[in-house]
Image (cartoon, rainbow, N blue to C red; front, side, top):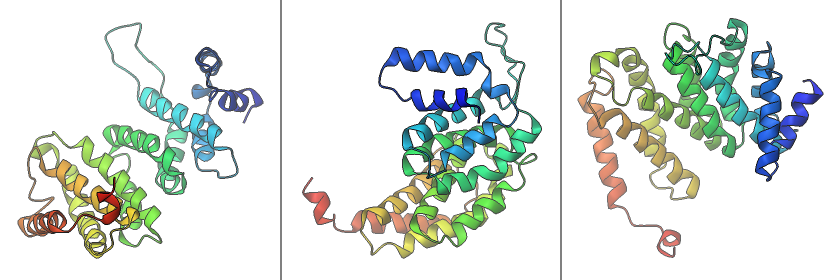
Length: 252
């Protein structure tokens, strides 16, 4: 990466607001986002443990903003806000091929920003332009090597669910079959952890319940969650509500 861009990322984490603003304007002035290869390089920085956390934090924020602004051209009627530039197909392909692994490899403090970027890409490209998404995510959910990978996969699935949260059932057909294949893995992991009340275990159970809530609060697509599966989740929720509060939580 060009020294100017990298140093700008380093300094953009300064606590002095005016300095951060100046450095953001510097990155914008040289139009880094419009240079081919820059956005995929930001993604690489986000999950590179050899790079200082403040630099990775700056990179992930700039990456997310770039994806949101430049994934597609804007048709906004306001000419002052209109954007006639979008990322190249090559950069998009690199981002899509690496972003799920990047979420899994990134520190927890960076994952939320990456998942917002995934949400934007899903909104624009799924399913026609991102057929690899479902197989990639299913792999993370079906046989995760550790709790961190599972938590990352659930965070991604939650963001997917948010895209379809308030859509009519006929507009959720694209995601119905993929969800019907991934949901049993989510339930399996949550159910297996029922007896484990560690912080990591409880987090995963909460993530699973949040996904189901988002998928069902507006309407229920029975191709996505057939009645027997809903019955399992209702019983799981009852079991969660009926168990004793952990002692450490009671002391808070």
